[in-house]
Amino acid sequence: MANDAVAANAFRVAPAEPADRDDPIRAVLAAYTRDLIAAVDDTLADFLATEVAALTRIDAAMGGFAATAGECVLAGGKRVRPTFAYWGWRGVIGNEEPLPPVLPALSALELLHTFALVHDDVMDASATRRGRPTAHVAVAAQHAAAGHRGDPERFGEAVAVLIGDLCMVWADRLLAQATVAPARLLDVRRCYDQMRVETVAGQYLDVLGESDSVNWSVDRALRVARYKTASYTVQRPLLFGACLAGAEPEAPLSTAYSRYGLAVGEAFQLRDDLLGVYGDPETTGKPAGDDLRIGKPTTLLMLARQLATPAQRGALEGAGDGTDERETARLAELVADTGAVARVERMIDDRVAEALAALDSAPIEETARTALTGLATAATHRRS
Image 1: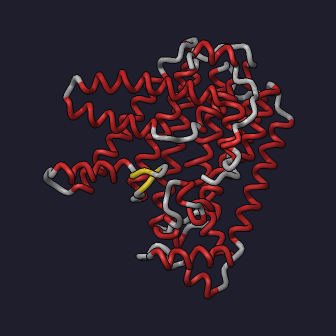
Image 2: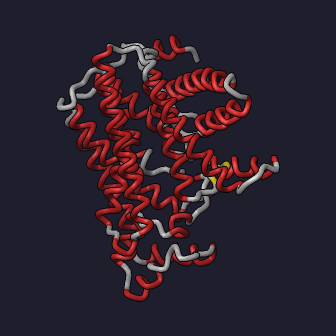
Image 3: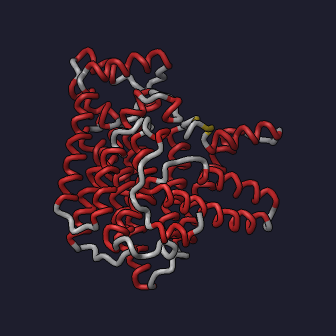
């Protein structure tokens, strides 16, 4: 859809397609932001075509590398971060302002997300993402098929790191294409930089936790959720959108966005913890049980250890020590038996209630309030 048509539409509420009913978040995204997602995808495709062509002129091999990076960006995804940023913007500015001036900024968040995903997959040694081989696995397979020298896995990991780095640079370049006042863009950039710093902080704590899981805790697992996921998935995108609209960081609406975003973002990660153990691989696009297989100290696993009997705790502390598929399935049952799954479900519900309470008192445009209310539930009660 052309950008002018998107702007004129102003993303009015429309009913979800029947095919979306089995996936709550897709249904809500379809209902409120179908045209936004199409516009973001078009913006990314146009931007990437130009960037890939420029790198191809350096060397044909560079063109192939850049094209692989572009495929990582465009290969599925719900565009959650641009969606929250959009409603953060609309909640301040209303429904009349055209979208095209800020569309590059919203779309840049998806490039930042790809950077984080590709690097995260290398760190976690994940084999699949969105139902496809992860970047490092796909590149390793290409290396082996071509008969090149060296270790294919090492080559794949090295190239995936570079893909992530390139996506980070691309995000900066696309953000700079937003046509807003320079002073406002500087404020947006400050918000964006804080989001990136917090993402790295959360990722470091995530890596540290895997190497020191015996000394980890529920509080530290929640801190990882806050900085690795909540910040750059919901909280900062909302504030990023508010900055694009000219809102001050201390404004009441910004405060409400921060409260809402932290609560929904933490609940989003808690749902990921559950899906990482009990999700359907056909829906999530990732094998079930990966977190237990590597002994990742998620809030779910930390709660299970806290609630477990001595015998159960002994079994749970062995998670990650060469755990095979059968043992992973047994550990998943054990985690549920401790009551940790039910506790995490309550924590998700409590955070959604906190988010909705933040919206109740917020001076926000009403369509944005309705959309964010639906997204709070959809983003935290999804199947993928």
